[in-house]
Image (cartoon, rainbow, N blue to C red):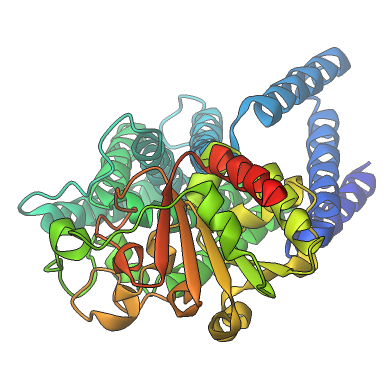
Length: 463
């Protein structure tokens, strides 16, 4: 029986690896997701059957309930709320690890002081408690900020870094104490409490603009907690799957830090760019912004050969991806080359825009990454920015005092004409005005993203 279980775990691990490989490419992402899910299904069912934890009936009920919850979430959750959902997933993973480790410790001690506990078990239990508690509470704070339940601004107070240092030191000290004497269950509960406070104080000073990086990092933490739990239970598939999640989360965090020109240290300690002493909105916009209409935009397409569409968070909010694809096919039917420029963190999550546009069946070869499309903006007749802000803000290149100084951006300001579709001149996540909106070659179309695109399409057909 043991060999069959290990064989099933090996199969599940292989499926996890192929699943992750598939998720690295949009065309194979759906298949990768299915393979990963199948691997997890095999691992869970085999574990429950092998350990005789629950009956067949309970396994079937659990699969049915879990599938129903997953299906409802998949249908109900808006694409714009995906970061919040990922934050909750991370948190649930962390608290599950804490609960499993706690139960294993209580069961092992059996209420007997001096019960035998091996070193691997005690170290893994302590690691799970610390990382899992930090992940759970940190993820809840991230969820609350993204959901608007609390302000997304950085919360800073005097002595914050010293408090975090004290909490981290206390966690290490309590952990060492428990490893030396695992029967100190009171210290274990105190450790979970201290780590929970640390999870809150680590995330609360981080602003909303950096939340995508935090979520990616917490995703890695949840994987590390799961891997540590695998050592608690001596479960190989949990160690492997947790390690894969932990490693992929770190890679994703690194990618996002590079895309935002931020160091992980600055993000963790809530440090913004060089300075916040930038021009005010009145100084940037006063008397310079040119509003336009759908009819005037339709005339811009007369005689042009190349158009680049830049989707952003506003397109996701308006659910305008299908209308955007219809507009691009309409322009292409008139002999205009149309491509989509994708910033790595547009929409708050890596790949967010890719997923939205894939949902509208936009061919993947039309999606151009930043490094590929930036050299082409100088040869672009019209750039249409739909709901993007910070990722097209030229001060990242021109103002070393800007909070986003040095952040790689899409160089849409180099196009001959820029059309910005936006509800208002409100700032992006960085909270700074965007000189692009007041540039000589830019016109602003103030409207909801989907309505604006539909109006432009109607005007193009009538022109």
